[in-house]
Image 1 (spheres, rainbow, N blue to C red):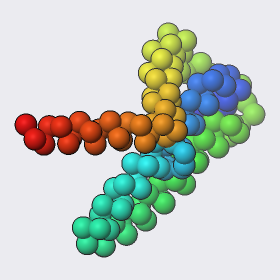
Image 2 (image 1 turned 30 degrees about the horizontal axis):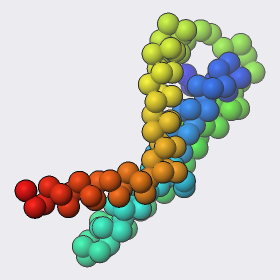
Image 3 (image 1 turned 180 degrees about the vertical axis):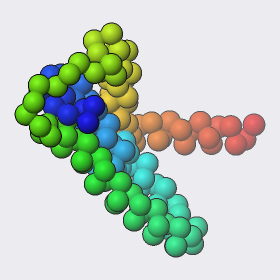
Length: 131
């Protein structure tokens, strides 16, 4: 309810929040997709089949909750004028907006350029293994 009509009042904030929610849902090419993919693959390869299937099902269920929040942001539930909310007031919006913008950039960066970060991590692990 707090986010109702946010796309009309603050479209950039709504876009950043939507991208972060879609990353949490695990949609490609965002970082959340690759993190969930690696977790599910490692769970399957380590023969934890039931745990991996339960994780997949709960991940699918969570997508509906994230999409519901995005729908509320884009299509307000009522046509009445929305009161000014304390959570999304302009005083708090700059703090939330900066943090959310950084998270959005990280999600997009790791999603599109994740292989670069992964190869750097693998190199650093191989170097510390011999120490």
